[in-house]
Image (cartoon, rainbow, N blue to C red; front, side, top):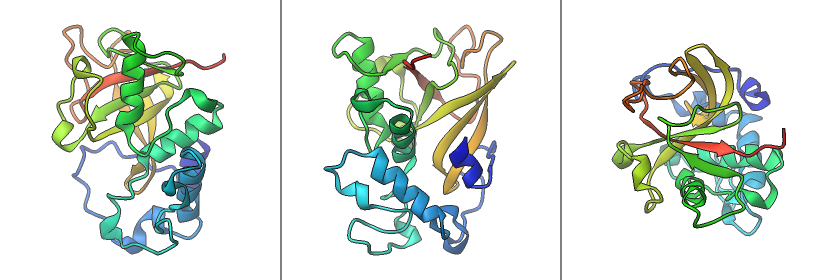
Length: 219
Protein backbone atom coordinates (compact mmCIF):
# COMPACT_ATOMS: atom_id res chain seq x y z
CA UNK A 1 0.00 0.00 0.00
CA UNK A 2 2.91 2.33 0.74
CA UNK A 3 4.31 1.76 -2.75
CA UNK A 4 0.88 2.37 -4.29
CA UNK A 5 0.58 5.66 -2.44
CA UNK A 6 4.08 6.62 -3.58
CA UNK A 7 2.93 6.25 -7.19
CA UNK A 8 -0.10 8.48 -6.58
CA UNK A 9 -2.72 5.78 -5.86
CA UNK A 10 -3.66 4.98 -9.47
CA UNK A 11 -6.68 2.74 -10.10
CA UNK A 12 -7.28 0.96 -13.42
CA UNK A 13 -10.50 -1.01 -13.69
CA UNK A 14 -10.70 -0.71 -17.47
CA UNK A 15 -10.39 -3.78 -19.67
CA UNK A 16 -6.74 -4.45 -20.56
CA UNK A 17 -5.22 -2.63 -23.54
CA UNK A 18 -8.10 -0.16 -23.81
CA UNK A 19 -6.25 2.87 -22.45
CA UNK A 20 -4.14 4.87 -24.92
CA UNK A 21 -0.38 4.33 -24.58
CA UNK A 22 1.47 6.84 -22.44
CA UNK A 23 4.26 8.94 -23.92
CA UNK A 24 7.65 8.20 -22.35
CA UNK A 25 7.81 11.58 -20.60
CA UNK A 26 4.59 10.77 -18.69
CA UNK A 27 5.36 7.21 -17.66
CA UNK A 28 5.49 7.16 -13.84
CA UNK A 29 8.24 4.53 -13.79
CA UNK A 30 10.57 6.94 -15.62
CA UNK A 31 9.88 9.98 -13.44
CA UNK A 32 12.51 11.35 -11.02
CA UNK A 33 12.18 9.45 -7.76
CA UNK A 34 10.03 6.76 -9.32
CA UNK A 35 12.64 5.06 -11.50
CA UNK A 36 14.73 4.78 -8.34
CA UNK A 37 11.82 3.05 -6.59
CA UNK A 38 11.66 0.53 -9.41
CA UNK A 39 15.41 0.10 -9.02
CA UNK A 40 14.84 -0.84 -5.39
CA UNK A 41 12.29 -3.47 -6.44
CA UNK A 42 14.97 -5.03 -8.65
CA UNK A 43 17.72 -4.63 -6.05
CA UNK A 44 15.83 -6.22 -3.16
CA UNK A 45 13.39 -8.37 -5.11
CA UNK A 46 16.03 -10.47 -6.88
CA UNK A 47 18.81 -12.60 -5.49
CA UNK A 48 22.12 -10.79 -5.29
CA UNK A 49 23.87 -12.89 -7.95
CA UNK A 50 21.52 -11.79 -10.74
CA UNK A 51 22.30 -8.94 -13.16
CA UNK A 52 18.78 -7.57 -12.78
CA UNK A 53 19.62 -6.24 -9.31
CA UNK A 54 21.23 -3.23 -11.05
CA UNK A 55 18.23 -2.42 -13.25
CA UNK A 56 16.00 0.60 -12.62
CA UNK A 57 12.84 1.92 -14.21
CA UNK A 58 14.93 3.20 -17.12
CA UNK A 59 18.49 1.84 -16.81
CA UNK A 60 20.06 -1.52 -17.58
CA UNK A 61 22.75 -3.27 -15.51
CA UNK A 62 25.49 -1.02 -16.95
CA UNK A 63 23.58 2.12 -16.05
CA UNK A 64 22.68 2.85 -19.66
CA UNK A 65 19.28 4.47 -20.11
CA UNK A 66 17.01 2.43 -22.38
CA UNK A 67 14.15 3.77 -24.45
CA UNK A 68 10.51 3.40 -23.48
CA UNK A 69 10.02 1.09 -26.45
CA UNK A 70 12.19 -1.48 -24.57
CA UNK A 71 10.02 -1.44 -21.45
CA UNK A 72 8.61 -4.91 -22.11
CA UNK A 73 12.06 -6.45 -21.79
CA UNK A 74 12.58 -4.69 -18.45
CA UNK A 75 9.04 -5.37 -17.20
CA UNK A 76 9.08 -5.18 -13.39
CA UNK A 77 5.75 -6.59 -12.21
CA UNK A 78 7.33 -9.80 -10.92
CA UNK A 79 10.20 -7.80 -9.40
CA UNK A 80 7.64 -5.73 -7.48
CA UNK A 81 5.88 -8.80 -6.13
CA UNK A 82 9.23 -10.36 -5.22
CA UNK A 83 10.20 -7.13 -3.44
CA UNK A 84 6.98 -7.22 -1.39
CA UNK A 85 7.57 -10.84 -0.42
CA UNK A 86 11.17 -10.09 0.56
CA UNK A 87 10.25 -7.10 2.72
CA UNK A 88 7.35 -9.06 4.23
CA UNK A 89 9.92 -11.51 5.62
CA UNK A 90 9.64 -14.51 3.30
CA UNK A 91 13.40 -15.04 3.47
CA UNK A 92 14.59 -18.04 1.45
CA UNK A 93 11.09 -19.53 1.35
CA UNK A 94 10.01 -17.57 -1.74
CA UNK A 95 11.40 -18.19 -5.26
CA UNK A 96 12.29 -14.59 -6.17
CA UNK A 97 12.19 -14.09 -9.93
CA UNK A 98 11.86 -11.61 -12.78
CA UNK A 99 8.98 -13.67 -14.24
CA UNK A 100 5.74 -14.66 -12.50
CA UNK A 101 5.66 -18.20 -13.87
CA UNK A 102 8.64 -19.14 -11.67
CA UNK A 103 6.78 -18.79 -8.38
CA UNK A 104 3.48 -19.95 -9.88
CA UNK A 105 5.18 -23.21 -10.84
CA UNK A 106 6.92 -23.52 -7.47
CA UNK A 107 3.56 -23.08 -5.72
CA UNK A 108 2.02 -25.70 -8.03
CA UNK A 109 4.80 -28.21 -7.34
CA UNK A 110 4.29 -27.67 -3.62
CA UNK A 111 0.54 -28.24 -3.96
CA UNK A 112 1.30 -31.52 -5.76
CA UNK A 113 3.71 -32.61 -3.03
CA UNK A 114 6.74 -32.49 -5.33
CA UNK A 115 8.46 -29.74 -3.32
CA UNK A 116 8.12 -28.32 0.16
CA UNK A 117 9.25 -25.33 2.17
CA UNK A 118 7.81 -22.53 0.03
CA UNK A 119 5.50 -19.91 1.54
CA UNK A 120 3.23 -20.13 -1.51
CA UNK A 121 0.90 -22.99 -2.43
CA UNK A 122 -1.23 -23.05 -5.59
CA UNK A 123 -4.98 -23.24 -5.04
CA UNK A 124 -7.76 -23.78 -7.57
CA UNK A 125 -9.87 -20.58 -7.79
CA UNK A 126 -13.14 -22.54 -7.73
CA UNK A 127 -12.14 -24.22 -4.47
CA UNK A 128 -10.33 -21.51 -2.50
CA UNK A 129 -11.28 -17.92 -1.65
CA UNK A 130 -8.27 -15.55 -1.69
CA UNK A 131 -7.43 -14.03 1.69
CA UNK A 132 -5.65 -10.77 2.43
CA UNK A 133 -2.04 -11.08 1.34
CA UNK A 134 -2.68 -13.90 -1.11
CA UNK A 135 -1.66 -13.60 -4.74
CA UNK A 136 -3.94 -14.07 -7.77
CA UNK A 137 -2.56 -14.71 -11.24
CA UNK A 138 -3.71 -14.54 -14.85
CA UNK A 139 -2.04 -15.60 -18.08
CA UNK A 140 -1.05 -13.05 -20.71
CA UNK A 141 -0.60 -13.00 -24.47
CA UNK A 142 -0.11 -16.58 -25.72
CA UNK A 143 -0.98 -17.86 -22.23
CA UNK A 144 -4.28 -15.97 -21.88
CA UNK A 145 -6.11 -19.28 -21.53
CA UNK A 146 -3.71 -20.87 -19.08
CA UNK A 147 -5.48 -23.34 -16.78
CA UNK A 148 -4.80 -24.57 -13.27
CA UNK A 149 -4.64 -28.19 -14.39
CA UNK A 150 -1.71 -27.42 -16.70
CA UNK A 151 0.54 -26.39 -13.81
CA UNK A 152 3.44 -26.60 -13.48
CA UNK A 153 4.02 -25.51 -17.06
CA UNK A 154 6.90 -24.47 -19.27
CA UNK A 155 7.82 -20.77 -19.17
CA UNK A 156 4.76 -18.64 -19.92
CA UNK A 157 3.80 -14.95 -19.66
CA UNK A 158 1.63 -14.07 -16.67
CA UNK A 159 0.72 -11.30 -14.27
CA UNK A 160 0.03 -11.54 -10.54
CA UNK A 161 -1.54 -9.11 -8.07
CA UNK A 162 -1.60 -9.06 -4.27
CA UNK A 163 -4.92 -8.96 -2.39
CA UNK A 164 -4.90 -5.87 -0.15
CA UNK A 165 -8.58 -5.48 0.79
CA UNK A 166 -11.89 -7.32 0.55
CA UNK A 167 -15.52 -6.27 0.58
CA UNK A 168 -18.74 -8.10 -0.23
CA UNK A 169 -18.50 -9.11 -3.88
CA UNK A 170 -15.10 -7.53 -4.51
CA UNK A 171 -11.36 -7.75 -3.87
CA UNK A 172 -8.90 -4.87 -4.13
CA UNK A 173 -5.58 -6.00 -5.56
CA UNK A 174 -2.27 -4.28 -6.28
CA UNK A 175 0.21 -5.05 -9.01
CA UNK A 176 3.41 -3.56 -10.34
CA UNK A 177 4.12 -2.31 -13.86
CA UNK A 178 0.42 -1.72 -14.55
CA UNK A 179 0.18 1.53 -16.51
CA UNK A 180 3.90 1.87 -15.65
CA UNK A 181 3.10 2.19 -11.93
CA UNK A 182 1.97 0.27 -8.86
CA UNK A 183 -1.74 0.20 -9.59
CA UNK A 184 -4.91 -1.00 -7.90
CA UNK A 185 -7.72 -2.86 -9.59
CA UNK A 186 -10.98 -4.28 -8.26
CA UNK A 187 -11.88 -7.89 -8.91
CA UNK A 188 -15.40 -9.33 -8.59
CA UNK A 189 -15.88 -12.38 -6.38
CA UNK A 190 -18.78 -14.63 -5.44
CA UNK A 191 -20.79 -14.38 -2.23
CA UNK A 192 -18.30 -16.75 -0.57
CA UNK A 193 -15.30 -14.76 -1.79
CA UNK A 194 -14.18 -16.96 -4.68
CA UNK A 195 -13.02 -15.77 -8.08
CA UNK A 196 -15.40 -18.08 -9.93
CA UNK A 197 -19.04 -19.07 -10.18
CA UNK A 198 -20.00 -22.50 -8.85
CA UNK A 199 -19.46 -23.90 -12.34
CA UNK A 200 -15.86 -22.67 -12.31
CA UNK A 201 -16.38 -19.75 -14.71
CA UNK A 202 -14.26 -16.77 -13.69
CA UNK A 203 -16.42 -13.80 -12.65
CA UNK A 204 -14.00 -11.17 -13.90
CA UNK A 205 -14.66 -10.66 -17.60
CA UNK A 206 -11.39 -8.74 -18.05
CA UNK A 207 -8.86 -11.19 -16.60
CA UNK A 208 -8.95 -14.97 -16.53
CA UNK A 209 -7.60 -15.58 -13.03
CA UNK A 210 -6.53 -19.22 -13.16
CA UNK A 211 -4.67 -19.73 -9.88
CA UNK A 212 -4.49 -18.35 -6.36
CA UNK A 213 -1.19 -18.52 -4.51
CA UNK A 214 -2.02 -19.00 -0.86
CA UNK A 215 0.68 -17.31 1.22
CA UNK A 216 1.66 -18.72 4.58
CA UNK A 217 2.10 -15.65 6.74
CA UNK A 218 2.91 -15.64 10.44
CA UNK A 219 -0.40 -14.30 11.76
